[in-house]
Each structure stands twice: as structure tokens, then as C-alpha cells.
Image 1 (tube, rainbow, N blue to C red):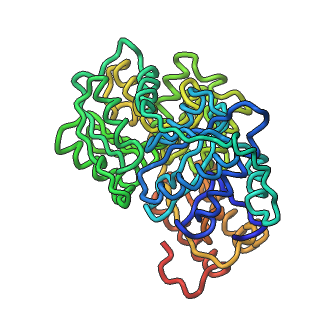
Image 2 (cartoon, helix red, strand yellow):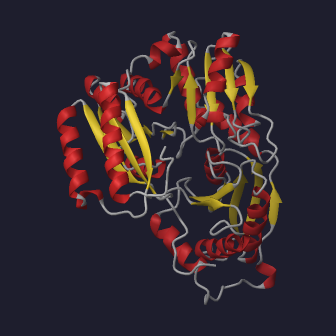
Image 3 (cartoon, helix red, strand yellow):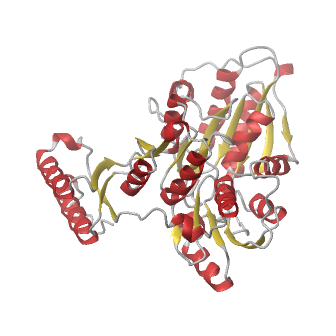
Length: 460
């Protein structure tokens, strides 16, 4: 075990299975630390634990349960369910804490652990730091409860039904999906059971793929990262819409009836417009990250609204939404947060909102998504050996300023370091694709020459 290192990243704890921090010992200590942190009085304390379909989920489910029960917490195991389902169930069951065992869109050999508080929001940085310090303190003396006060573990069989009902309640009661053909890809992940049922129970004709998890095929050339499979099936079957979820079901990418891929920015545009028309977008404010396309910012301005940006990560979007009282926000990658219905991103919920607008306005998805003409973007990842603040490197700053001047107010340059990998992420955006690609390559070459790994040949 490593001492003095913070376990938590921007979305909980994540890493390779059986390597730090995703080790069984760490998970047991996490259970002990979390139990000690949240056990405030003599009442029985509840923890809801859900997971996705990774084989390693059994390791961390068992280890966390052991630590939590030893610390005096009662554990309610709900099995494979989407991340937003655990957020919902934590509130619905009046639990003190919700835990999700998932590495989201990552391959099967990764796993992760993230937490929700009793209100369904992710833990504060302060709580994460406190818990992390306990886990990594080799001298800690755990405040074990008496033997008759240890916790118990229960399996909750009706959890999927509760979540399905909550999703259907977000859809207008007088609306049906009768006659609508949907291609649905569940990424062989956490939504493989509940997502098809939601759309089928509302009347849709559902063609489903990615619903045969084997513990190793989660996100494997399927789901939100590979919407091309959905696109091909939409065109082949004459479907009205394609829905591609990721492994833990908290993000969605859509495909219109013409086979065009619809990303989070395009979904946010027509959903925000509809919410403004209905008086459901306070101040006309939409919250998104620095990665969202500039076209979305211009779209909101033209509609009389405003786009507020945050750092990359849905937790930062949620934090800003809470700070300013916003009702809607999200990420280009498909994390979409509708505070009216959920405290976190929910791919199924977002797809239902898109379908609601299609029905209400009598328009095809291509008509709605076509409202936002995206600016060309070029993203290049450059492996690096050190992370020096970009503003401290004059050569990079001069080139960036030169490019910004050339783009004027119709484009952007974004330089940032990955929070999880030794990489610099370079994004250039503008109206002219050729210029965008040229400028991005220039920046990438400069960063590579100054910070890059000289032995690395494949930089993409």
C-alpha cells in the first residue's frame, strides 16, 4: 500500500484491477474508512452498493461489504445497475451512502469506485480527502464497533423495478413510444437489463445489442464510444433513432434516422432550447465544459441564453449547476444532467428527454440535431515526460496566441494535461477544417519537441 497519495481523481477511484489503487486491501480499508466517516450515531446506517458487469466487480463488492459491515454499516446489494440508478436508490431508500463499482467507459481490465452522499450527489472533495487519508494511514487504529453492532448485508431484488418506474415518471404520462423504432446499444454494461425494458414498456419497437455481458466484453467496440454499430443498424432497419449508452449508463450518444451521429453538444442544444421555451432554464443558462463546441456557445447566445463553461468532468458541471442554480448541463461526451429528474448524468433519462421533444414537436431527430452546426474540432493527445504549466513555456504561449489571433472570435485553442495519463491534450476549433488541422499539428509538434517522450513514435 502506498502512503500519502490521494486515492481520488475527478470521478472517484479508478485503475487497473489488482494494481494500486484498485486492490482488494484498499477496498476493504475504504469500507472501514467510509463506515467510520459516516457512522455518526447509534442508529443503523445504510449503504447501497451497485456495480456494472465487469468480472472484477465481485472482488470489490465483497471487499467493500466486508469493511463496511465490520465498521457497523448495513449493506444493500443491488447488483448490476447504471450509476444514476445508485444515485436514485440512495435517496429512495433513505441510505447514508451509495457506492458504484465501475470504470465507466473504460475496458474490462480497469475498475473503479465512486460514492454518492445521502442526497444523491457525489462526495465533496473534503470528504474524499478525509477518507483517503484514513485509508492510506498505516498507523490508523480503526474504531471498530462492538461485536453485536456489526453490520449485515442484504440483496435487494426489486431495485431495477424502482429505477425503471422513476425513469418512466420523467416521461409525460400521455406520451407513448408506439410506432417508434429504436436501435439500443447497452455496451454489455450496467444498463443491459433495465434500458430495453424502459423503452419497451413505453411502447417502442426496440432492436437491442450489447445486452450479453460476459464480464470481459463491457465497452468492447460497442456503446457510446463506438456508435457506428448503432448507425449501421439504424440505416439497415429504417429506425427512427439510435441510442448508444456507455458501460455504466451515465452517458449517451444518439444517431438520427439518417445515420448521423448526434453528440452531447447537439443534444444539449435542442434540449436547452425546449427548456427555455417552457421556462425551465433559469436565466437561460446552460452549463458545459471547456470541451463543448464553440457552436453551442453561439447557439445559446442567438437564442437569448448563455453558456457557462467548467473544467472537464461531469462533477465540475454538477458543482457549477448547484452553485448558480442552473437546471441543465452536460458534456460533449454525452453526460447530460437534468436536475429536475436526477442529480447525475443518466443516458437513459437523456434519451427519453430527446424522444419527448421529438414527439411534442412532431420532428425527426435529424431536424432537432440539425439546429447546431458544429465547428470542426481537432484533438491530439501527445505523450509527455513532464507537466510544466503551459503558460510558463514562452514558445508554446507565443504559438497559441498567434493561432488565437488567426482564428479571431470564431475559434478556440485549448491546452491541458490529462488528469489520469502522462499526456498533453491539444484541441483546436474553428470554421475552416484545413486551418484547424494545420494549427493543431503545429501545436502538437511544438509540445512534443519541448515536453514529449523522444522514444514515443505513435502520438495519436
